[in-house]
Figure 1: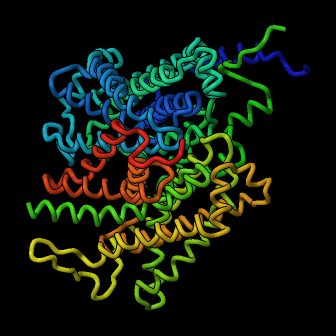
Figure 2 (figure 1 turned 120 degrees about the horizontal axis):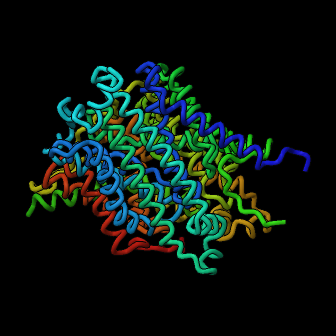
Figure 3 (figure 1 turned 135 degrees about the horizontal axis):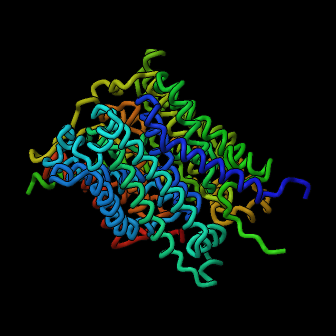
Length: 340
Length: 289
């Protein structure tokens, strides 16, 4: 082969990634609050996209119901912090609650195959939305807000405030930004490690041929359930973080199929499904489009839908698929190769 | 007691409407294993089409409806021939994601054109007329016609499937697409005809949707979900099963609403879940998958 050694390209990419992470960590010290808020959006959407991609791109579980776990995580955060818990552990508990509820949900939904699983997952999200709308303690159908006495009580906030001489609102944005960065980096690492593990190999085998995978001893239901519960755990934590930032919740917003699943699907399709790199590109593209076009309202969504349909028809592996084939690059190497 | 009978009756009538939503979905899944996530939005689109035709041409909704049926057939045919046939294949992902994108496009296109206002189709004196059933209950004429329409549509489709050459081609393609193609059937054309039929039935559903309740551009996804529940409850591959499934959802919703108005939709979903747990393949399954 005449092209450069892919291992060198990878090392270069890893170096750039570490440098980028360093810049992102110290960014709050000199960036504007608006930029931090924009990056918060990009990070949280990217994390959601990675979990959706893990389900649809690797486990063959096309879910249109991931808003279920965003909403469950968000409501758990509200319920536990109002009860007096610090928001930081509340985020972890939110993930755990989403994961625990994902078990029975998955148990029922896995009876549906393919496309029917997709709509079934949506029904499950609707059930959770309608149930939470019945809970008067959590604001019922109209929802509720988190007061500043809760959002400003987060552990570490006073430290950031005094260490960097910030006002409480700026310290809050900084803390939320760091949490989102931490969550997205953890997500990328976890997804990467999972896909490189034995379970990841099992997933790839199931994706390529479920009967063949089962014939060599892969327990496909167990593997899929594991991925489903893991994705719910991550999605629940992201949901909790998003709503800690919003500090206002309602069932319709927290369980919105448009906000927490449609945009996420567009990110993954446009960027490239079945790759870790694709959603990163997709999240950046969505942010740029949102920034430029969101004021157009319905036209913006029509354009986004059209773009996704065109990408699916013309380049089903998305932008990253095109790039990676053209230049033979892989930043997160997942392909297994025979030694020569 | 009589009040509960009335609830059952109203639920059954509502179920007829849901069966109309579901028949098209069941039909195209049966023939090409495609689940059209834009199905609900296309039904709402058809309702707006009937509204616009009747206003622009100054004609009755019923006549506009008669024009909309062939128009929706043509739209369904074109949609399948131009767009959806390209997505069919071994991979289940492309058709799902393309129809999901389509759903967002149709919904927001309607929102942009017609705003979020609620609309209604008026059918003259039929709007509010009802038949009294000996004092304890009364049935609205339009809901009753909706249930009858579902029965007529299913009888007509079954006649088409089992009595005509086209029906034979449709069934052959459903059973084994590759072999059907070897026998000289043009699958692309058959699939487009099937989507055309599904959308024509969608126009019937749209008429009864608009004539019995308000509609706006955002209600499509909920119609898709009711239709889906009816198909799964009924069992894949059986149109009569789909009718039964629609009635189960309708009755469950009516009972839920009777206990507490806020529980109407939830009760339908719970019935669906219960049947999925007890009988995963539905009440009257005919197809393996």
